[in-house]
Length: 131
Image (cartoon, rainbow, N blue to C red; front, side, top):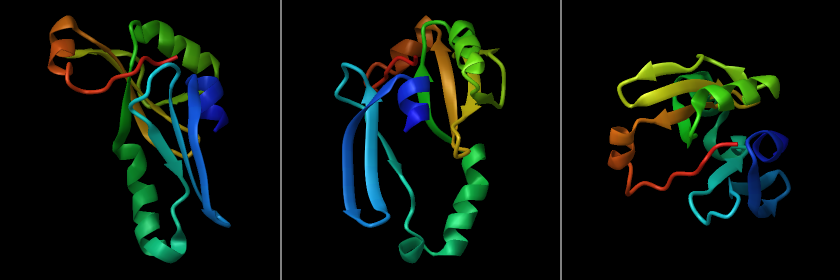
């Protein structure tokens, strides 16, 4: 939770404990109702160890979410100073400037400063602004 609240600037929305060891926590950008990011520890008894192992092996190769920022280089520098692990430094693409980072559990995220043209393609998608 520290990473998402103190480093990325998200706030806790829901914190539901279903039973011992089974908890769902959601976070979202301050002042926005959507989207919410669900944080949960998968239940080994439900999913099985082999399936969870395969998920853990794949998670740094699959983007969990995209955090949109107005200045990718500045946000990258700030998050780097906070100790965030980056898979790539800000790189220019046709759709904008992007850097890829990991959370403490190894989930991969995109930090994206979109071009004006690309932004119009996302107009119907819920987007929040990164820290």
